[in-house]
Amino acid sequence: MLQQTIKSSIQLKGIGLHSGKQCCLTLKPADVDTGILFYRDGKGRIPLSSLSVVNTKLATVIGKTNPVNDKCLNCISTIEHLLATLHGLHIDNLVIEASTEELPIFDGSAKIFLDAILDVGIEKQSKQKLFKYIEKDFLTTKESSYIFATPYNGLILDITIKFDHPLIGHQHFIYDVFKNDFTTIANARTFSTIDQILYAKKAGLIKGGNVDNAIILNKKGVLNGNLRYKDEFVRHKVLDLLGDLYIDGPIKGYIEACCTGHYLNHKLMLALN
Image (cartoon, rainbow, N blue to C red; front, side, top):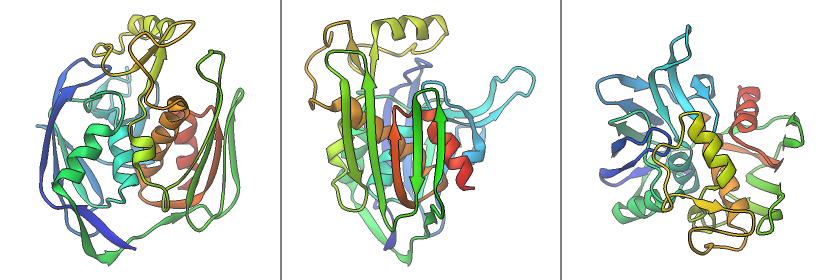
């Protein structure tokens, strides 16, 4: 399987979910073996690696923090939806330039990233991909959540979620990264309850949150329009995992997870290093 990049540069603008800041984002083609490179305007490159993840609370954040107070010195936040798009489209080499510390949330899915990349096109390159392989069984847990990974010559995400809500309940979705079309999960949006939103706002998060960038749930249903899929909730969890798995590049294995999040996803990637 050959490496790939995009055919021409892309410029996007949008609001960061947690920071509330407008971000100007540029995606540029890159040569073979470049990998995915992140740059902050005026602050230089931020290494993309599971070892550079500094926060997994409600988003995946990479960069460098102050050891005294954990405040970001040079960070990029909420990278999972863009990385999921690159993973789902099998794009290996790209330069990403961001004007602020958080990538745009857009509508809470990967749709805008997907549409923009398909619009300019994908270019095959001259060298073969290099994969990271899950070489032995691995299990990590947190309370009632878990991720189990086992060797497999491909990449399958077998995801289950369980929420005490009439629209969610028990949902299950299997996504084969090398056989299924990325569009089956790309349009699935992030979701939150009113209580979770109030808690996050008290913590100084979701300053850019609004009714257009997430599914908002009350106790009985959706407050802001219709679902895109009946099982949109589990599809979005697959999307998040797909993005988090790409932090160390292309990977092969069978991954089964229940109620996973960025924290457990990160623990899995650290174990593979």
